[in-house]
Length: 117
Image (cartoon, rainbow, N blue to C red; front, top):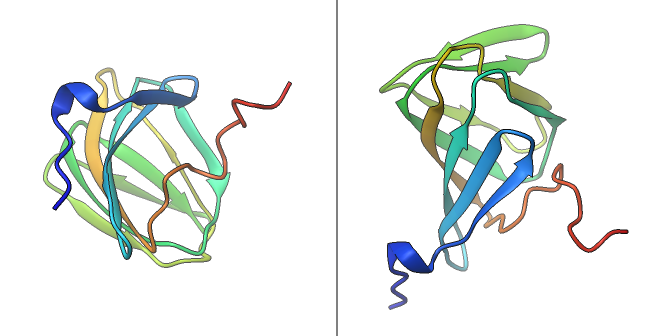
């Protein structure tokens, strides 16, 4: 068993206002916490991972296939692998939630490469 204490986790700002914390990653699944500031956007992207999530607080609007889905506190969602999607916090308060990815996704492919110059 692997144990990671809360103070040992690193939070990264993947794009302005979008903060991700990898909570745990195994062979088949990873889980992360997201904290999205008001007016911050996750750009449209897709990935081979199936993504499920839960909104702990706030409202996050997903943009999928020309449709909008507002996910509020207590709502959960599933995004199949390969489906293009984006998300935006249109509220006045941060959105906090949990994502899972299968297979594991340690780093989002839409985030800038920190090693690129």
